[in-house]
Amino acid sequence: MSNFGPTITCYYFPPEDVNKNWHKNAQKLAQTHRVYYNSNMLKKLALIINPIAGKGQYASDMPSMVDLFCKNGYSVTIYMTQKKGDAKAFARMYAQEYETVVCCGGDGTLSETVNGLMGLKNPPPLGYIPVGTVNDFANSLGLPKNLKKAADIILEGHPMAIDIGMLGDAYFTYIAAFGAFTDVSYTTPQEAKNILGHLAYILQGMSRLSDIPPCRAAIQYRQGALEDDYIFGGVTNSMSVAGLVKLSPDTVSLTDGLFEVLLVKSPKNLADYQKIIGSLLTREYDPACVTFLHTSEITFQFDTPIPWTLDGENGGKHESVAIRNLQGRLLVLT
Image (tube, rainbow, N blue to C red; front, side):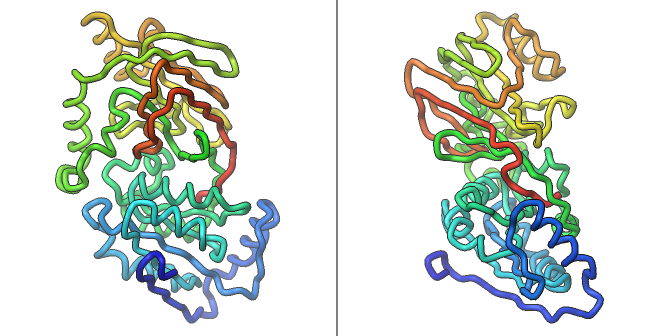
């Protein structure tokens, strides 16, 4: 693993009474999801940590968190990311060697880890300890921000087979989007995120409102087709976008094989702006300015290449985009 910088491996000496039902549950899970399992094997856990996410708050809790994993029967390999792309590369190259992979970071670190795991035929279950600024995906799963509680959830081992989105050859867990607010996450400096937290996203988003150009998009989805000028388009599997745009929990499922798609038309006057803001705040969408739909597949065709974001990270510019839902493709411990 020297290509990825230093790692730490923590071994354990299992007490006699540790997790007596663990092997039984693991065998059942392996049979259900076609994962290899050997009861004589030492349980191995890979802990991928982004050291700069969320003010580095993991640091004070990491010893007790690792100790908790070890006391519950795991040998833990800790990997500290050093640069963008490390989490993806580590997960893709080494995750198959572990029974569980745990990501400790923000939405971007999670997205990288998922992209690495999706390159495997049978990826191991993923645990998530959210320490980012907004943590859209963790909020949708109801995961706690307290590191000890998040680690407890991983150890309880209740796997949820969640949907994963695919755009081209890239994967996303909770959003692929263009237009307003979609580049807030990756254009907001990390220092500002760490100091100001969620306020940094709001300030950055508000500063961009006057710069939002509309884009013409021809859209096709399983139930129909649309064409209009839009200032925002989001293909989501989450209840919020950068903590700014909220969706109703009643309309969102992470396991149904369907995306929630939100399209905001370009406002022509002040009244249209007010309708848009009202629709987003009340979640009662006025079809004259906001379109909300569910679909498993959707395509976008633009006149010129348009910037996209995938899970809050730069997703490149695309003139033509095809997105599909991979239902139940990844096991996440919740």
